[in-house]
Every structure is written in structure tokens, then in C-alpha cells.
Length: 311
Image 1 (cartoon, rainbow, N blue to C red):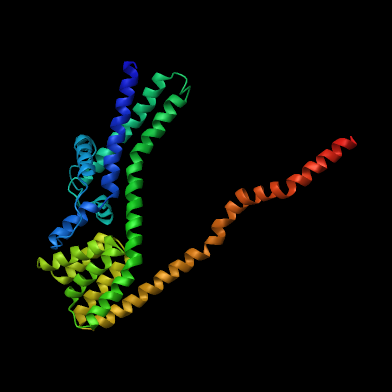
Image 2 (cartoon, one colour):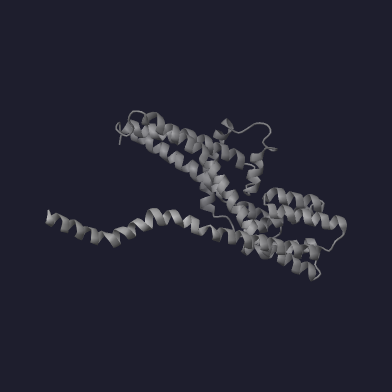
């Protein structure tokens, strides 16, 4: 194995380590939930996988310095990108730096790998491909972390939306049974964790803010801001108005729960109504041609043979 192949394998290893560490940080929220469990006093929280976390930490230490090349120095805390990190459940102090480091490493490494592979095999890229392929790979490396972050936000918000009506039902039962709103939120956070860890995490954060002395309207607004879900924003507004005007909390919760459950059912019906249109193109271009070949193929072959024998 010559020196060029060694360099190429080293670059491939570096890109794999950087990508694995960055994707693990963007798509995993286990550490945040475990810290919340420890703050809430849960001693039964599962421990970290030592070997995997060690590899991830080592990879992050290698790629974080590259994030200084593209991390904004000022205004990041008040930017829309900061809220996207919060909506995705990424609250670690190293998450922004790792995100920008991943963008920088992939943007530079993927075209470098393509050029190195072209040097090893001169017939791999020819003509305009020598310029077009590295540019496409650079664009892919730059926008892939954005796509991963957007996927995590959509997945998390969908999970919150689907589990929130059930959480409101549990909260309504607890309030009607005589518990206070804070105690009901604590109970709901414990019970809903099996179905939706993301919602349980947000409820635990809300309870911790209330324990720290933050007033309830501000804590509810923070909940709506962290999740970015319209239904949770409406719940926070409803609870603030119920406290301000002195209306029944249990009645407000029951009305809000019925409204969210109806909205969830309507979205499910809307998705079911779109199935026919979504199946149209696979049927036309994939299934129907195969059926035509199976049904008409033998008759067509017999017709061709009959015509050829006549000629």
C-alpha cells in the first residue's frame, strides 16, 4: 500500500469519525434527559454507555476546533438558529460549536475525498466532473447538518403534538382529583415518560423552573418557546388567561384537551384522504406497467410469432 492510499484511508477515517460524532450529538437527546432525571431526583435513571460515550467525546474534541471557523461570534443567542436548537432538544453548550464544526469538516472533507479518489484512479472523474462533483459534495456536506437538524425538529414536534392531548387528559384527572397544577404537572411528567420522553423532558423543565421561583406565566411561555408547537402555545395562553381571570383550571384543561384531540383526529383524517393521490404515481409508473407486462406479455409474444410465421 503506497502513501497515497494511506492518506486517502486516513481522510476517510477522519470524515467517518467527525460524521458519527456530529450525527450522534444532533440526533441523540439521552444525556439531556439523564441530567434532568438527576436534577429531579430520579436515582433510577439508566447510566451512559461508557464505551460509546467515550468514542463520541473523543470525536467531538477533534472536530470542535473546526467550528470556530464558521460559528458566529455575536448574536447567536438571540438568533432563529438558537431557537431551532432548542426546538430540537439540543441544549448542550457544545451543540452549536459541534454543529458548525460538522458543517465545516464535511464541506472541506467530502470534496477532498473526491479529489483524492480521482488522484488514485485517474479515470474516475473526467472533464467537467472534476469541478462539478466536488462542488456537489461540498454543498451536500454544508447542508446535510441542516437537514439532520430539521428532521429532528419535525420528529420531536410531531411526538409532542401526538402525546400532548393524552398529557392534558392526565392533568385534568389529577386536577379534578384535588391536586394542584404544579403537583399535577409533576405526576404527568412521570406517567407520560413511557410514551413520549420529549414531552416528559419538557414537563420536567417546566417543573424545575417553577421550583426555582419563576412565575407560572413566564414558565408556560418558556415551555411554548422551547417546543415550538402551536398547540402547546395555545395551552400556555389558555392557562395564563385562566389564572388571570380566575376561571376553573379543570374546565379549561378539559376544553383544551377536547380541542386538541379533535385537531389530532382531523389531521389523521386529512393524511388518510391524501393516500389515494399519493398512491396514484406509484400505481401508474410501477405497478400498472408490471401488470401489463404479465397480462399482455404472453398474448403479445403469441401475436408476434403468428405474424412472423405469416410473413
